Image (tube, rainbow, N blue to C red; front, top):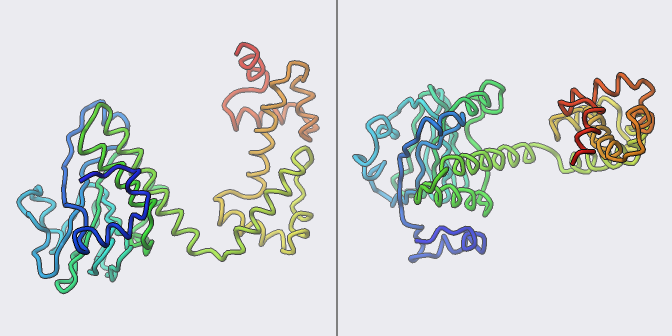
Length: 316
């Protein structure tokens, strides 16, 4: 059956519910090969698939189609890789690291390497699942940095066309396995991770956070040629400076000062593209009295000095 993105993006969930009298798309699974070239990327897609489990059916279905390590999902297993599983209908249970979660339609389970887990649908409901497995140094680094954690492996994300579309992209790649399909599949996995984590973060934040951050960004961008004045911005927003810092960092993962410096350097790049603007003049226009501090800051953010930036732009 066609998994093209164009068809996925129009009334995806409704068609999925009504197709074949309330069924789902046909099931498939792939365990994927990869080359030494693929491994150098630091990201690998190891498996992907879609399975429709009818009420009362054995789980996992087609047990012998899975490698031995993957067959004991209902009883308990430990994998050397990550997996993300999206359940779009039916109910079940998910246990990871000693914690048990009630799986509902729209739930996403994150399996972490080295963590004992199990999951299965309820016999009376069955379920439909989409999954993708992945591993590599890049994903391990996300775990080390706290982007993933053993305390946050279950997400009540809900039904979203965007998530199904990303799975569709991954499935397209792993089914046909065109040249560099591993790179493209991993790009889809990164999009999937970003989508899930973004929705989770926004879900936990009050709606007014978005308004506060948007207004703070506007005030900073309107005064990009001056020194940042957080007390003044906070006063205009009607909150304390400490509260502004807290809200801004929670929503954007950076402080207001870090964001302000980012937009200043970006604006400085544009100024330096002008032939008649020197580094000293650009520093002054951006509100830096110390040209050398400006140069150090510019290089730390861009990886190149402002004088070298002008030379590169001049040669372009």
